[in-house]
Image (cartoon, rainbow, N blue to C red; front, side, top):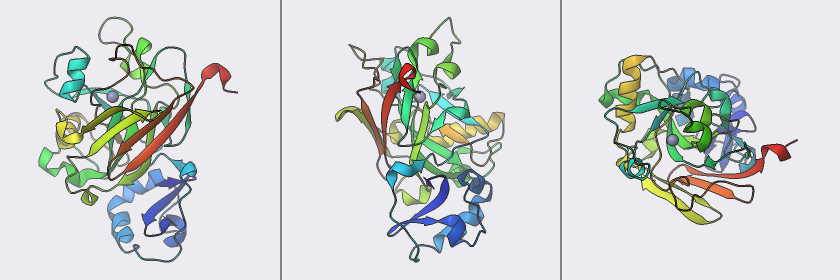
Length: 282
Ligand code: ZN
């Protein structure tokens, strides 16, 4: 995880500062560790019962992949979400980007631009090994781990104009890609292709599903992406949202300054976000 900007390993008893515990073999910069992922995980496996772990102050958690070279996102990847959006099921992964400068942490206060800001709970995969022309069966070996993401979306700009619309812009306002609270390696799940996830606003459940219901699994998504261009260590992939988004509700349920959005995935943890209007942010 990223604790106060420093790469921190989750161990029994809290968090271990990796730069200190490794005698500076690994840097405190979490983004840099993905380029040495295999070496890092080998070192990390030996650090389970060591002294020096400190309790984790969750208010200081940052994004586990704050500066990827590339950020991919997949649209319409759950059948029930495609249906609620009134759109046909895609025949191959429908890809767009959220520009990486919009990545935020799991506890940040997020600025709402004018318009209609919506939530989309998603499993996010982070690449741990360069992936080029990778077949689905080999994909998990190229993934460092998974975390939770919110694909925050300002729907009016996103859907403005004729297709192809402004997906990349409407989903890339400052702070619109919060990630966290931690990166969890695939081997820590009984089945990394079946992870429960969801979100609530002010305690009211909005979304709940499982990644086994995705139309294209993480392996299928990466096979497709890597058939076009290489995926690099530290790259981030948002994998699509299940049904329950605010825009498809009647009446619509959009995010406002009185809301607390809690996003969870079993085995990963939760993110908690509150919001301010752009005009009120100094
Ligand atoms: Zn999405």
